[in-house]
Length: 330
Image (cartoon, rainbow, N blue to C red; front, side):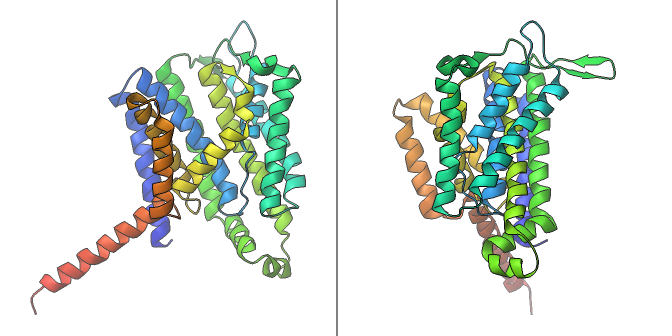
């Protein structure tokens, strides 16, 4: 493990500690905000999985998020809480199936054409729910109860803000842990090698198409897990959950945090959403402030905040070591 990966792991641990501290330091609205940030961080981590190792820039990942959300809304009973495990697995399966269909077609193209293909599929999903009368059309659909865990004869509800935050922490932790494992595994290394030199990987007998398709399906499934949480938290789903605007926003999170790192998408989600929250409290023109922040990050840290912070820490450590050596006698 090199220094960059160690710093990346350190940032992940710091994020986990901060997430665990939220219920002890805040209550009410702040915990709800933290839950929303967690959900978006999970979606950003899922997208970062394909943007980083595979080099696939998708503008349609919100479609998998929204499809899973709608799947949960349609599976949830109107008069009682849904079974958590059954509806979560079903919603993730719907997202994975959609990702398999989209990826099977889109991954045959590369670069700008891949971006356009994912954008087209994403907008197809948006208009399917917005215009075709499915799931309440433009008005969306409501979910009356949050799901509950039924296991070994016991029932664990998640209606309270704190309990649902704990559930979101567990699911998002699982999403991030899986992205960490895939990026650091031999599979992730091979994908990165195929991204950098596809002819050589073909010569070694690997199929870049199959490798990328498998990762795209996993990424879509993880985005579906985030979509399930988003629907359960807010209690309603609208077609905007599938729109390209949401996909683009999540892509910005990945890029400002650092697509080459596991923690980068998580950090990008936290920074962007907290900046939006703070700016909205001070001005009605908060989008201008968000734009200034994004421009500043692109100019000062073009490969993302986490890699830039890692270089700054490494430089400071080097200077400290040199200073200690100069202070030693003889």
